[in-house]
Length: 335
Image 1: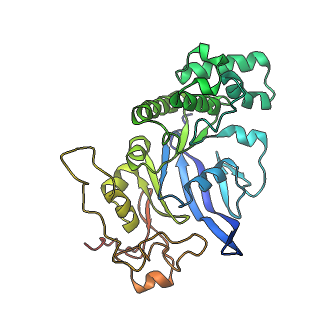
Image 2 (image 1 turned 90 degrees about the horizontal axis):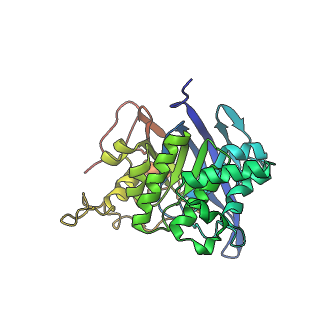
Image 3 (image 1 turned 135 degrees about the horizontal axis):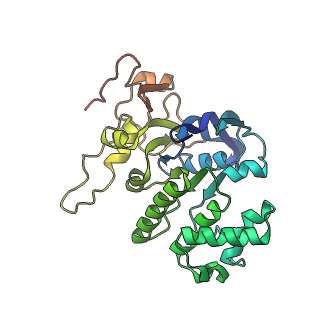
């Protein structure tokens, strides 16, 4: 039976805080706050937002590198305990590709040793490891002769292909890509993005793709979630969200995207948040009351300071957390 389209990953009210020191005192930093998301089998969920919004923390929560404070995660129909360390079998099903292709690899290990290490941890035989390493190296476009090379002998794009091959070695169902192409040149980015698309089709993979590059996210994603200060403020299909953003923060992000046409400026006049009380991003240690975006929002109302907006469902897979909308009547954002 074809499982494509079923929910592979569901996050239900997931939260993660860190204890930090700020101004000489201990404080709680709310990195991820009550996030609920889902990813369908065989699709790509893009997660966007400014630096410090919690994207990378959420990625590490999904794969088990961070333990959660609260919430649930359901993976492939089974509940995963996110507040305890996972078993190696659970780790097999989810793999991660990190931002820096160099620091993610052991400089003293050969390419074949790096790719085969997850299989070694799982107790696979040397013959099985060698066979699998050869297969995934071919799949990501690395010549067999590279197996005996070391990371410093490869280019940045080639090193990231090694990281992708290592993620595929255990044949996972979900791959989380945290800024996986941001450290690469634009021409190499395009090659790696096309590779990821081909691998998704070949392996039946599901991706969670995190990036600050909105053009890249639009290119590769089926669905997109927008995060601000640890919370999801808008969610929908990539086409709907980019063509008709609802949340003022999403509009602010998209209005800043430069067009690829040199004869045009940005597609719309950017939303001006300079007239608001504080146009700077608030600290996640002491976020604003109510709506966390209200200090930068040009449409902020009194209720925004008093009550955090609930997720308003606008249709199949589309939601927004903003007081400008209601369940009974979806209002247009004021011009």
